[in-house]
Amino acid sequence: MSVTLPSELIDAIIDQVALLDTTTLHSCALTSRAFVFPSQKHIFHTIDLDVRRPRAVHYLRFHRLLQSKPHLGAHVRRLRLVDDSKEDFAHGFSWMTHPRTPISRTLGFLSNLRSFELSFNSTGEKWSAVPEETRVGFGRVFAMESVREVALECVSGFPVALLSSLARLKYLALSNVTIDSDEGSERMDVSNSVTLEGLYLRGVSPEIIKILAKALSAPDTPPTLRKLALTPTFEEGFAEAVAKLIVTCGSHLTSFAWLPSIHFPSYIGPINISSLHSLRSLHFIVSFRKLSSQKPFAPTLALLLQISNRPNLIERITVECHCIMPRRGEGEKKLAKTWRPLDTVLSAEEGAIFRNLKEVEIVLSVNTILPTEIHRVVTNRGELLPRVEARGVVLTVRVDSCSQDSGFLERLREM
Image (cartoon, rainbow, N blue to C red; front, side, top):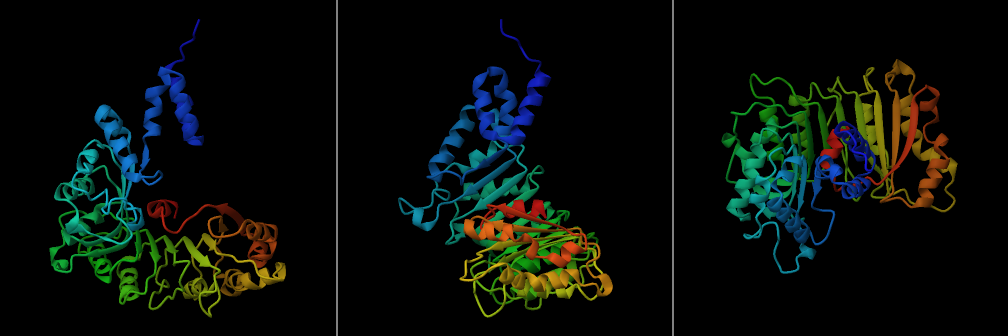
């Protein structure tokens, strides 16, 4: 005789399993009909159409599933659409911008979408080259009341009015985006209220930064920006536009992330965070590749020294490390020497500049650091920031599969 579990207990079991392992959740859904519907809200919560190849086939399966079971679309909260790279084009065209790809109809099923990531191929796609029906579908998603997060990557000629309307979101991430050169800031849509709390900028044109700064600092608009993440570029005017954004819109920033490319040297330029008096957390990417004559921590130290002229409110600092290379004869003494400048700045007793600091987290990327080097750093963690630890600051070393080229919205959420 089979025993029927109460629905409340089934829901509790499914919710707990979903927290730990979605693969197990799929298995649970196959064991009993009673588990199917409670599992669906977790299984379809996040749809990442970049995890399988070919992407077009994976997308079409998802679209056909929604056609046959449209109620599943209501469970989707996060969607990531990623085009093929130029090298992946099997037939010489992009599947995502092909006129026969029913993306607009797919999006129509997702009535409760909260987060939308849209990435065209890395060579860049002109917005005007996207089929009109697809552009309309994207526009509908951008305007949905339920959508609070958008990431946009590798698109040129993006409409100014559409860009300014995205300031109503909670989080916005832009990577390799340019606006229509024939439009100006006078085409800005100022009818939407500005509620932007988190902004990630990587490889965007100075004009985009100026438009967002204008929207965020519009008359009668209260300061909303709390998180700012930057990947600096060498594009003329980028650093100057960011510097102005910080001055005009950064008065209430509590989190700042400096996330330079791990493949090229980075320079601060006119960017200055000394006016950000409300900062509570900082996040730095540090590449140990020998990219120039400067030391690995040079840009990080330059930014920290900007806020070292008076006691600050910083409570947490994350140092995300990439490309730590093995070098002959490099032991714990060499490791301590490399980290000593950071240890000195953060532990300075004069004026107790970082007296509110409670935690420093060091993240080691398994994608760019050999296991032997990770082991060496973890084993000698006591040599990294000994003076900081002596002040009672908690030092944690975490090994992660962090990647610089994905998860823009995830970075904003975690800041």
